[in-house]
Length: 163
Image (cartoon, rainbow, N blue to C red):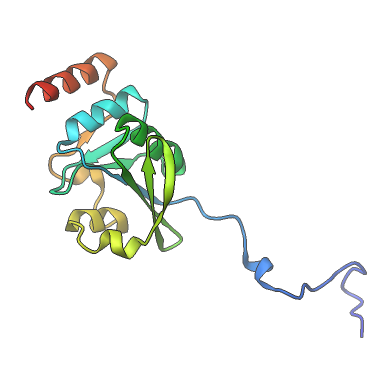
């Protein structure tokens, strides 16, 4: 029986899942986990690459919190290019879900199980990812925002001398 309120070309699909698949929400939190020991050189390198981040120190390495979560892939690519052969992990929180991917030399190298990545992570990583703390509020944070190219080069040079 046809409903006179519906247009003639109205069709109900056999698979209703397509009705629920809208465009994916932009991530609300984006973190790039690195093996860089100190936050200052990573923030300086990001300043040179024009990636706006707040870099948080942790026992496992510096974590770059991207200021613009919509630039997740670009940020991970830029940071992994800076670190060349050392892999980084991109963590994204989107629609209550956490995803993890590995990046090497500017390219996405595959997905990782987020639970495995977070299993031995320091508490600050989980706090950042869940949004219970902002990167700018963590002790020892260094930002790439507002750092001049000259300051960045000087920071990188002085950290290289300390090694």
